[in-house]
Structure formats: C-alpha cells, structure tokens
Image (cartoon, rainbow, N blue to C red):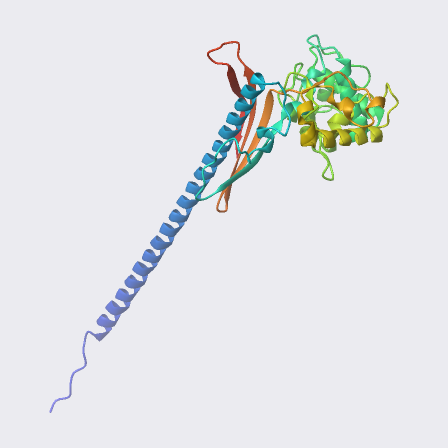
Length: 349
C-alpha cells in the first residue's frame, strides 16, 4: 500500500489565508476610521449648530433691548423725560413688560448700560479745539481722585489728550504731545486731530498707562468710566460712583476726594430707593441728599440719555456667544416715524 502524498499547494493556501486576513484587517480599519470620521463630523456639525443657535439667541437679546429702549422713549415722551435704572431697560433682561417665550435649550443673560452715565471724552474740547473748562475739571478730579495720580501726571494726560484731539500740531505746554513726540519715541502712530472714534485710542496717548486704561485690583479703568458716545451731558441717575464724585467741585470748595466719594455713595443710595424715583426727573434731586448744603456740582449733568450699550451672552450647552451693540435713540421730527434707533456699533464673538 502506497503512503499518502503530501498536499503540494499547502504553502500557497496558507499565504492566501494570511493575505485574506490582512485584507480583512485593512477593511475593518477603514470601516472604523470611517465610523470615527462620521462621529467627528457629526460632533462638529452639532458644535456649529449650537454656535449658530447661540448667535441667534444673542442677536435676539439685542433686538429685545432695542424694543425696550424705544418703548421707554415713547413712554417718556408721553409722560416725563427721564432715564434711570429703575426703568425696564435697567432691569433687562428680567422685565414684566415683555412676555418672553420659554427656551427649550439655551439661555441668555446680559445688561443694558447707559453710555451717558460715563465721562464723555469728546466733550473736553469745543469745535475750535479749546478746553471746555468744566469737563476738564471733571476729568482732572477723576484722575487725581479715583486713580490717585499726581497733579503733574494728570496734567500730562490732560495736555496730551488735548493735543491728540485738537486740530493743530502745537504741543500744549511742556507736558503735551503732538505727532512729533510719538515719532521721536519710535511709535508708529500720529495724533487723531479730531474726536476719538474709540476709547481704545486712549492707550496711545502720552501718560495713559495700562492701569489708567484698564483699572486695577477690581477697580474700574477709563475704559469703564469714559465713553466716546453721547451729547456731552452726564446722567446723574446712572453715573457710577467715581464719575459722580468727579462731578463735585472740589478745588473750588476745598472738598477732599474722600468726602466727594462719601456723598456720591449717598447719591446712589438715594436714587436706588423706589420712593425717590418720581424725583429723578429733576436734575437737582441730589440737593435732597443729606449733606448737599456743602456740595456744588459742575454744570455738565442731566437726567436723560440717548446712547446705550448692550452686551448679551447666550449659551447652548458648552458653546456660548456674545453680542455687543451700541444703540442711539432719538425722537424724530416726523409724525410718521416718531422714534428712531440707530446702531452705532455691533460685534459678535
């Protein structure tokens, strides 16, 4: 009986089996990669969708602010013209004047800030580039009082700011700074020679340090206390504590900054009291505050406002969006369109 012959093609079959297994491994890897990419694309699409939802929500918050500001102006013209935080815009977005829909996902928060409660930088000079003395005094009080800079450093800031905005190229004394000063210091900028378009320009002005501009230790800086918007009047119903204190005549009356701050705090407590809201339409309401007999104010304030900034933050899951707008409202002379609101600036982050 003959012995069984070995299978001649076993080696070839083993190679084919290995090749098949390799191909299957590659196919599985490709399938897993495709699945992973599909998951990534799906996740990315969800993030994009949430980001779009967030932007839509924040934009809706700005539209709601526009509505409240226009409605407030209409009510003021029907009753008595006044603006203070006790009104609906000051309690934004929590308001009972508008019924907000329930959001299935996401939320919005933010605030409306009266820009005319801040110091109006562009009101420092008249049309010919000369000082408007009352505004100069207020800014000087703010610099030496709130920021505690020396009188000489305050003079440097004031003179340089005047040179930045006035139309000529003649430095204001020894502490001023026209374009030639910045070129000598290897700085690539020249003076505006006109009103500031943005508060960020203050960072280029001689004497304005980062501390002055941004503040320190939680205290507000010029970017928080000043504005390039408005018609010049400072609203005493909305001005923050340092601006209120700076409005008080100090050099003329010998009043110390600490006393001015104390009176400013009393003013804020007074205007927050709902029992006093009906008095806030009178620009002299501060005379009813305890201690007012020894106080005099620079005549650059009022109780109405036209320019407001709105910052809205919306969130959908872990994705957030921020919308920022500066809105200016006014009553029109036309009866067909009595109220107008212009967007001076709009940004989305």
